[in-house]
Every structure is written in C-alpha cells, then in structure tokens.
Length: 200
Image 1: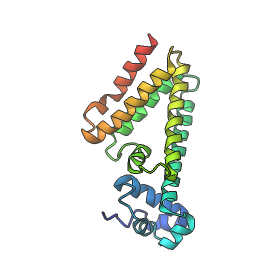
Image 2: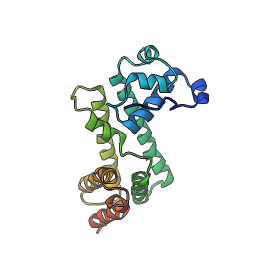
Image 3: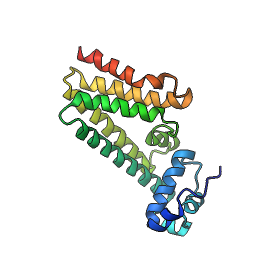
Image 4: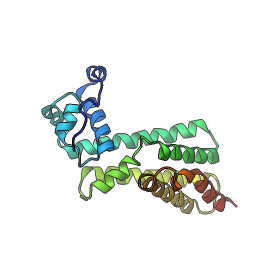
C-alpha cells in the first residue's frame, strides 16, 4: 500500500533535524496506514531523507516503532498532568474531564482509535521492542484511573477503574467498527452511570 510522500511541509523539513522528521513522518504514516503497511522507504521519503539516515538514527524499523509509541505514551502522561492542573484537588471533576476528553477523541473523525492498542494487535511477536512500551503504557493508564477512583472515595476503586478502562477499550473498537454514532457516542453517559453505581 502506497503512502503519501509529502507528510511534512518543506518548511518543517528545513526546520527539523533528521531524527525528528523521521519520527513525525513515521508517526503519521503508522497511525493512518498501519505499522505493517508502511516500509522504511516510504518513511524516509515522507521525512525528506533516505534509508541510510533513518538507520543511522534507528537500528531497525522495530526500534523506530518502539520510539514512536514511547513518545505517544509520554504525551498521555502530560494529559493527566493537565487534567490535574485544570481541576486541582477535585478528583471527581478530573474523572469527568477524563470521560469528556476520551469521548471527544472517540468521536473525532480523524482518529483511528488508540495507537498503542492498534500496535498491540499488529505486533504479535512477544519479543518486539514495542511490546514492553505498550504493556507499560496500559498498566500506567489503569493505575492512574485506580488512583483517581480511590480519591473520589468509592469502596472498590480498582473495580470501577477496570470498568471504565474496559468501557474505553470497547468504545474505541465500536467507534471503528460500527461508527461514531453508535455506542461510542454515549461514552460519557455510560461512564457517569458506572461511577454513580459505585458512589451511592
């Protein structure tokens, strides 16, 4: 499957160092087309560089994939910090903010679900360098939810967190398979109902 060569503008090409260009171009291509569908030639072309330069910065495509996912995981960590800053000392408001942000992502027509979950499906090899990145990311996301659920004073914060975690994972699949007007469009309402069932 072919990939567009002009992933980056000429201005971005001139301003970014090669490693950054490769990460930006590969991230866009991997997310839109799938990791398996994109070869190093397409990445190098989209980044305005060549395979030799790509391999100078990344020992293999697998290592590039792992770094792409590592960056996304880092961005998710910043999201949680921003959520806490927006609602300081208000865990219930933070939880509602999380639900709303996730629903907005689910309903965004430019999105294709969670890049790390997509990668987990595409990469069945147990020893792939991206596997530990994906696993650690999902564990940390779950732990963040458990902590937040604990702060709102529910009796079983782990249970509520797992319900919300699985609701999100299912909603992501539903948005891709049956469309954004299906069950995913009620993500906030369903999440709030789960929370209410534990708070009472």
